[in-house]
Length: 294
Figure 1: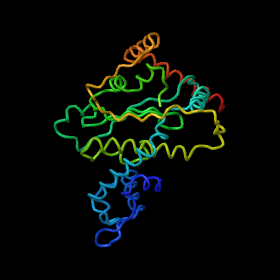
Figure 2: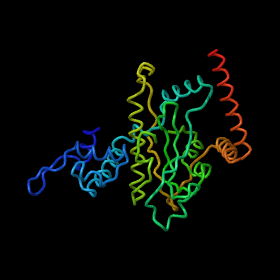
Figure 3: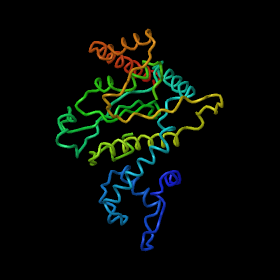
Figure 4: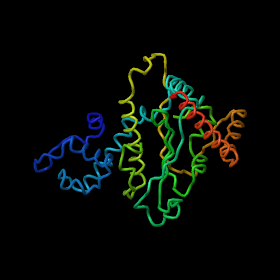
């Protein structure tokens, strides 16, 4: 990763200044960025620890997150390949959730430095301004879909209604941590929403890197050269463009199915029935496990 980032952005290459003094090394800059992401330390922490000024630490993090996004997003934020889908469906069927690819959830990231004028829009049930991340993760915690940037005043159903996840479903397409990265466990200290977006996506990419590295190689299927991946698709960083033409060509039958499912998602009765079915299913699995233990 160090070589990839340095090859992409010359900022990370060690240089001499006008006086001939050697600047920060690539290792120092990456260590500074990774410690901010992994431990959530503030930028002024590095003044004594690594002799890096606060403004320089912030600059390093900005360059690092953009480099990680541009170098790795096509692989680590891709949609599932046919082999991926077969593996996911086989595993969920084995666990009693036939047809399920992953779990969908929304996370609220507190925004400490939210501009005062935006406070009402971004303040929801938590009582503090937050930014929402919608993500779909499979059983091995690999994140296949990420949608970040919506204000915290929205609930999960509102977020799902605006997410590109449903747009892909309506076209008949398949959809494309928090514990590992302390920077998103604490409040966001940045002022710029754009920087926060790149930080979040960087954490997701690095998370998927770790999942890939820790994957059980014995359980992995052999490489299939005929398994052509779907076209890489960037995880969406929310940016509302009112004048953008969002019309798509849809199959009428598929659109009707999509609208029926969308209404079911927003139906309180359906939500309650799904919750009851899930509780009953988990309870029956627990009873079965207890019987097997006996």
